[in-house]
Image 1 (spheres, one colour):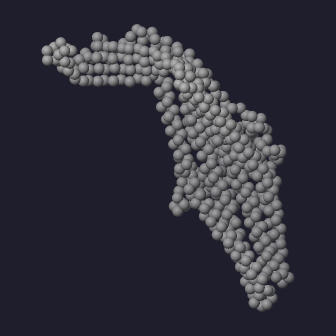
Image 2: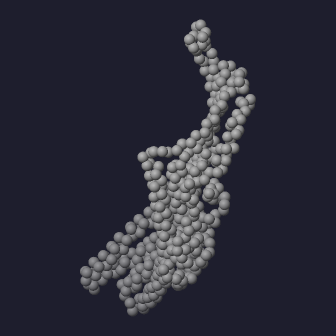
Image 3: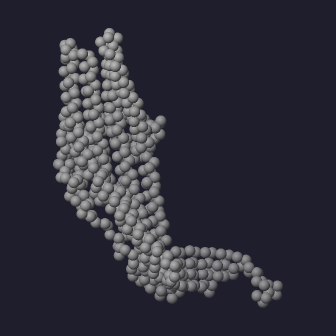
Length: 506
């Protein structure tokens, strides 16, 4: 093929084709990042002003939590709970959880789809062919008595290119890149959800363990109290109704044990699956509240930053961008399509002559296709794309509002959690003082054993309530980190999924 050179007409038309391509002007909408509406840009998340810190309570996990407005969130936010077992479990989940692996694979699929579409739209399609055949021409056609047989060899190169005058290709690529953005933020959303689920499940396990222990202690006290009542009944000191009432109370406590054990077992199963293991094969650490430390400094992003930090908001924005690109494609399809095709071929009856200049031939074709009548299908497709864009706009705003509600809910929950813990700590302290007093009175013979057991039961119930209040502070702290986006943007660049360079707006 080295002997073949482009024909003069081809050399003259090539600059024209390039000029058309460079002069391409898209007719579709030019996507712009949605700005923050007044609601989303508000200086505060909650209806009333947020206090700079929560109230403090006595005892473990009673310290006030400070809200650092404008402070950033660490990428590994769960390490703020200062539990090496929790950190190890989250890391294991990141390595082995199939949902995260599926999201990462979907991102790679979107990237490869972009590369495929980009290659087919941005560059001319070039194909080469080489054929060889044996033919026989009749005597009538060849003028040779008896006919003639001969070999025929053909080599060809075909080039075709669609000039993107009205931006259909550009909009298509823009939509493909938006699909990559969507999958990337789906990875981040899965990453955030997974880490938050592990943390909250671990906190729930710790709370259930504490509640189960306190309930078992109460069960022992109730069993001891029943033994005393039965002895008193045998001695004729109390009626049968007292025995039945105590048995009923004991049965009620016993009935609560299986429910707590069930919840604990199911939580352990959930942790195993989150870590990418079957429940029967997992070897998980046991979590208790005393092994966790409540973060006292809570970063609180500004409302304007939340729009860029929440992966679900960014994913919804990517869908909005994709919908805008689809409007561009549908609009460009209403206009003429410009195509250039060229071919160069060589035909010979002997392989040695195949690439001689005398055997060469070429063709060059430029075409314009304009839709004239299609029953209104193209107009309907554009209207459908526009409606899809409007739906994506509304969905984006819905996701934004939901995100702000999540943050507001978490902030108020932390305020009320602190107040609840303060009250439960006071109730626990009062119950402990009452128990200590009852113990001394019992030792002096001034109080019955039944009254002492009743004081123990009250203390154990106050302890369960206090444990629940502690766990709520941990869980809602994790919920706040999740609602603020989880700090994925602070991970090292090497750990971030790569994106192609953004396509500039025209």
